[in-house]
Amino acid sequence: MRLSIRQTLPASGDVEANLGLISRAAKAAAREGADLLLLPELVTTGYGAGAEALSRLAEPADGPTVTALAQIAAETGVALIAGFPERDGETIYNSAVFTNGADTPALYRKSHLYGDYEREVFTAAEPATCLVEHAGITLGLLICYDVEFPENTRRLAQAGAELICVPTALPDLPGSYFVARQMIAVRAFENQVFIAYADHAGEEGDFRYPGLSRVAAPDGGTLARAGARPGQISAEIDPTAYAASRAENTYLRDLR
Amino acid sequence: MRLSIRQTLPASGDVEANLGLISRAAKAAAREGADLLLLPELVTTGYGAGAEALSRLAEPADGPTVTALAQIAAETGVALIAGFPERDGETIYNSAVFTNGADTPALYRKSHLYGDYEREVFTAAEPATCLVEHAGITLGLLICYDVEFPENTRRLAQAGAELICVPTALPDLPGSYFVARQMIAVRAFENQVFIAYADHAGEEGDFRYPGLSRVAAPDGGTLARAGARPGQISAEIDPTAYAASRAENTYLRDLR
Image 1 (cartoon, rainbow over the protein chains, first blue to last red):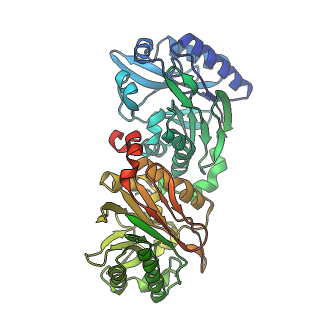
Image 2: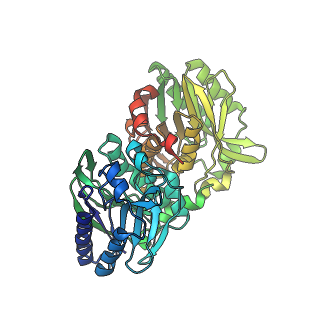
Image 3: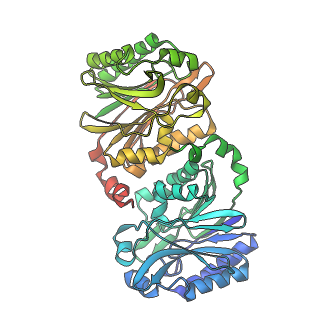
């Protein structure tokens, strides 16, 4: 399965502009033969749009934004995973959707909110196991801070995930570099799965993102990595290529 | 609290020689002002002594070997953590003991055995929370493969461990380098604790150990590291120096 990641500098609060950006990224991914395009957290609105805009722009999971994402997937033949603010009645979740343009989109809601900014707008969902079959691979979804808790990746791996896709919006803090460069690879290794991590890059209002999007392999290696600027990276997701690593590192079997 | 780690090439199957090595290491630690000396897995017998010797040399936790370790601690004023094969009736555990030379030693039994070699000799203990107060720090104990499971470090951190001490005997496999260099730092960071990891180095019979003993700090930094040869390293364990890291990375508080 060919995976593409678009590391974005979103247009803050401008859904139409961001859908245009996503459409262009999906076309670029299609030209590379990608089966899946992974986009960052809250990419449809920008992560840093502010509490008022995130609340105002939040939409149901069957609303116009997700419908537009499904249309992009249908037109390009590239499935999408994208973060968006989701409204469910009076409750707003920090969510991500998987759409292949044909089936009902799969929805994941962030369970571990980060910091006061997110907690002002969003409700934390109960930790959940969202799995999708796509292009021969079992995908699991988490969002940003969720992946920093080994309990969340373990739950998905034990449920059968081979690739865990993580839209994120890393703040530019010292610990964030450690998370991207060290922790993501360890999450992959300790579960013998792939982890794809898609961040924003650059400045959006008061927010600054370090980029560092990447794809980690089951053996702890890094298959693709982005730098500090917007851009697109891709990697082949082939679990059969890591049989030796799984045979040497039998964590899921040995856990007591 | 000053921590010393002795990275050893043990004398295979020769307890007396290894007690001599431990005594010399404790004296060296005392000269540095260390409060605690951490030694590798099965250091009293050698990890690679073979199934017959490990079974024959296994002793109760109040046997002559632990008594000798307590005497070394009492003479040098340096507490010891050392791995040894423990006999409890017909059952043999891969254990580690903490002794300060005065109080009853604390005992930890490995819960996650690694590979057929260990499983032939040892019985896996139920995962347990072994904590010790020493020199103003709350220590937790794990052995080797145990630390590769985030569930074990999390359990100790949630119980209050500030420093997790890990006697180990890493095999010289590709994944072992990843474990030592990447995973140990992540285990420290994701729990905001210190991790001390003490390995053998060199060849013992059919076994080859890569060394790579180290001390990881709560912010993911490495305070001390050994190379591929036997030697002694030390580090200051000061939780108060990492208040900023704990304030930024509130995993234990935020876990749901």
